[in-house]
Image 1 (spheres, rainbow, N blue to C red):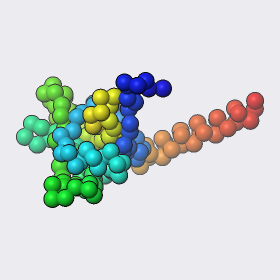
Image 2 (image 1 turned 45 degrees about the vertical axis):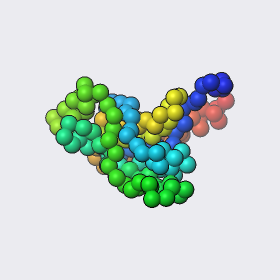
Image 3 (image 1 turned 180 degrees about the horizontal axis):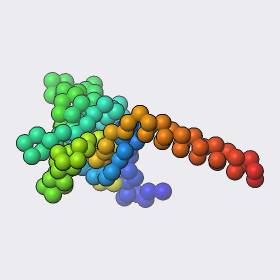
Length: 157
């Protein structure tokens, strides 16, 4: 259990379909440039990253199509819910991600949005390749067989 001065990682939004639709090659933790009302809205927990992706523009990586709803207590200083948000990465990481997308045809998919131990909003970004329909069926078969095997072993004793 976390002590008095420590905080645990709090997952706010998770892209559960990503591991089914994409073959994940590598993951990178990135910070996000947010406004104050966006942080408060994320803490409320109504954020979705299911349809979002990351893209490169002008040598920077941006999170596109993530939905952070407006903060209800804010007045005229509220934010736009689906605006592009800049991801904070080191130059070497940006070059690696852009190279994978350009050369190998990979996609940048957000997996989790969470607050780390220091209370900062972070995004777990994956370099992934899209799965074909037969690959999806194969992964579903493996998952079902694993479940069935577990049931059989429990029944056996």
